[in-house]
Image 1 (spheres, rainbow, N blue to C red):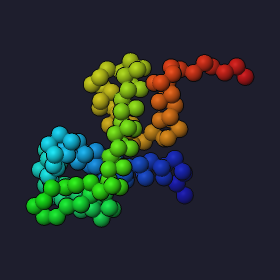
Image 2: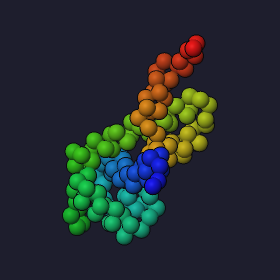
Image 3: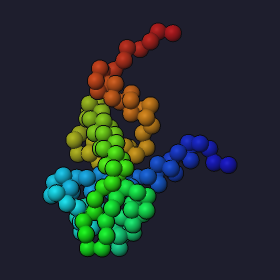
Image 4: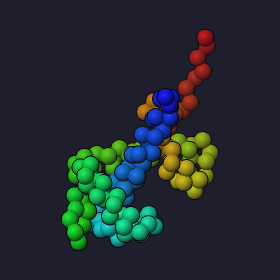
Length: 139
């Protein structure tokens, strides 16, 4: 029986693609007013078939709406996930930069960390960003 830490990691991996795609769709809509499959092909540097399969899964999961030859839109559930993912990403990236990681490394590293950081760790990162490091408690 696998331990809980591995179960959580597998679960995190399963949601990574959905989170990345809804973020990218939200960004494309914010930038250009519309998101098309080719925008995602270019953004992720993948094939049109890969985007079609992924968008199909997102549609099945209620995160996006689309039809053949039409733009991709986020459902309210997809918008919530995109917002949550963006916030997590911003906290992790800002935290990494605060502790001295370069802008370029923080941008790359935050792309992976954001999917695996627990809510507890994310809250602690945000606390450090807002208030600095906590004073060490004396036992």
